[in-house]
Length: 142
Image 1 (cartoon, one colour):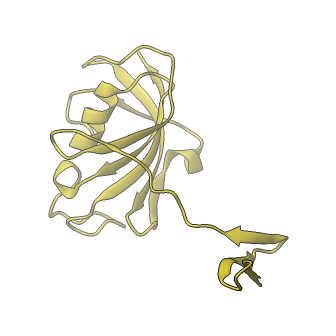
Image 2 (cartoon, rainbow, N blue to C red):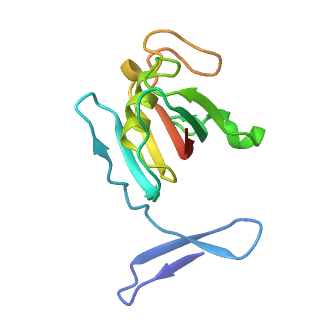
């Protein structure tokens, strides 16, 4: 279905998604904060908890995708937050960097360039030199 404006020009198109008609609207691009290392993040929901410190145990939920949207892993699918020690190199560098900046309760989208992820090493479901996108939530820091 096409909607026409007063001048007869096409102003919107609609797609049926197993239900009512849904307007296909252009997406507003997200604004990301970029750190000096190249990590990009956007806080979706700001937490009110404390900022973690190096050596604390972090519990976080995440969904990881490639830039094309292909999901490669998710703690949410398993129903259990992922745990690691902040600042000990137990996770990719982009995670250590972001979670040192975050507050407990923050939910964010991360864009992690290959040099802060797995670099030239391929991993199952992750090609070499991939920028990774994560939807993360900092559940706790103890």
